[in-house]
Length: 193
Image (cartoon, rainbow, N blue to C red):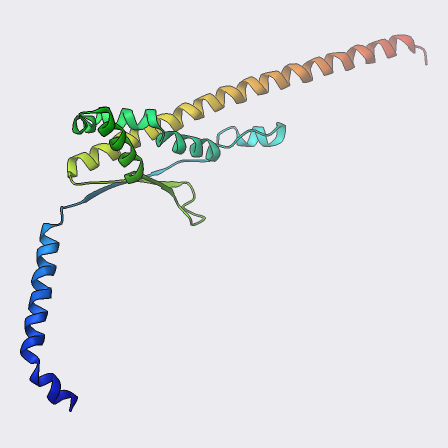
């Protein structure tokens, strides 16, 4: 009985299916193209001074510094620089539109680190836009800035480590000379014993 009932309304079902299909095709064809540009960068979290600092003292790792760079990458000054260098700021004519543009940039830029143990130092920078060249330009600008900031932080870190090691060397050199002076005075006092 159900087959006979469905056969009676077959033309209605076919017309409804075609209407839904045509509306779906129209919706798909009117959707704008969205391009996603993505770059992956590996950041070595093991500083070259890690062995030295492990035995002498504690210093912040490069991994925590990369986190700081990642947060700075999505800060307002950095986003304004990206907008200026990629000519995204030409899309905004008023200060309100510029604010919206910066907010949209912050929402559409994604910086993620790997979750697996092997990929914990692998960072993915991605951005979506209607213009393919703009998506690539934004990711390229972010990647260049990211690498520059990490290298700058590594350089600052190595200078800090060098200063710390020099301070420790001077401190222990003073302790050694003080101990040698005390030993010499002890030997002078008890020379015959």
